[in-house]
Image 1 (cartoon, rainbow, N blue to C red):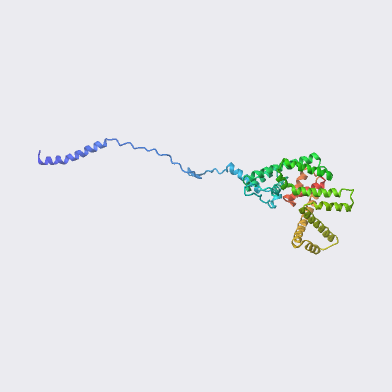
Image 2 (cartoon, helix red, strand yellow; image 1 turned 135 degrees about the vertical axis):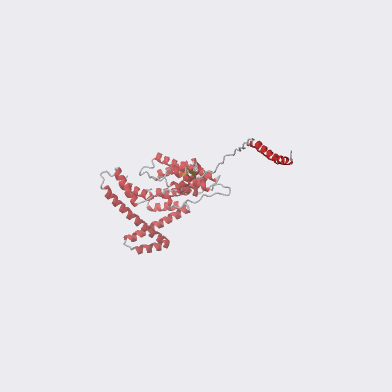
Length: 359
C-alpha cells in the first residue's frame, strides 16, 4: 500500500465510524414519554361563565336560613306595632336586683297591660309573643323565667275573671247592686292565690283593691235610704279617715277638676268670649295647662267637623240603598269611613255607628 493509499484510508475510517454511529442511533426507538397524572383543577364558583361565546348567569343560593327567617319574624313582631300602640311611649324596663332576680313591682303588670290593650286589633297569640320577646330582650335568667311565669299566671287570671263574671251574670244590664259587686270582687280576690304568689298579688292589686273598697263604701252610703243627708256626710268623713293618703289626694284632685269644669261650663252658658275662657283657665290651672286645653279644644273641633262631614256623606250614600245591610251598602260605608278616618280612629267611628244604630 502506497503512502497515498494509507493517507486516504486514514481519512475514511472516521467517516465510516460516524456513519455507523448514525445508523445505530437511528435504529433505536425513542423513549416513551412519561405521563404524569395531575389532580383536576377546581376553580372557585363564579357568577358568570363563557359557553359558546354566550354569557350564562348563575344564580347563587341567597335563600336565608330557617334561623334567619325566624329572627326576621321576631323582629317584625317587635317593630310592627298595632295602630293603638304606635304613638304610645313603651313601658318602663323591669327591675332586677344584684343577684339577677326579678324585682316584683307594678311595672310588671303595667308592661303586660300595655300590650294587652291591643286585644281586638291582633290575636292574643301575637300579643303574648310580643310580650315574651320583650322580656327575653331585656332580662336574663333567673329574672326571665320569673317574668314568664308571672305572665302565664296573669293571662290565666284574666281568663278566670271572665268565667266568674259569666257565672254570676254580672254582664247583665242593671246588675250593679253594691252588695252583688262586693261579693263578686271577693270571689275574684280569692281566685288570685291560684295564679300568683303573695308578693305579686300585693304589687299588682293593692291599690286597685283599695280604690274598689273606697268606691264601694261610698256607693253603699249613697244608696242607704235609711240615712239622711247629714248622716251620709258623716259616714263619708268616717271612711275617709281609713282611706290611704294617695287615694284621698287623687279624689281631691278629681273634685277640683270637676269643680273647674262646672265653672267653665257656667261661663260658656253665660255667653263668655273665648278670651275670657282662656283667662279663666290660666288663673285656675296655669299657663301650660291652659295651653294644653286650648290645643285639645282645636283637636276636638277638628274631630267633630270630620265626624259631621262623614255622617252627612254616609246619610246621602245610604239613601241610595233599599237594604243598608247589603254587602254593597256595607262596602260603601267602609269606603267612606276610610276616606275620613285612619288607624284607631276607624274603631272609634265604628263604635259610634253601632251606638247610633242601636246595636
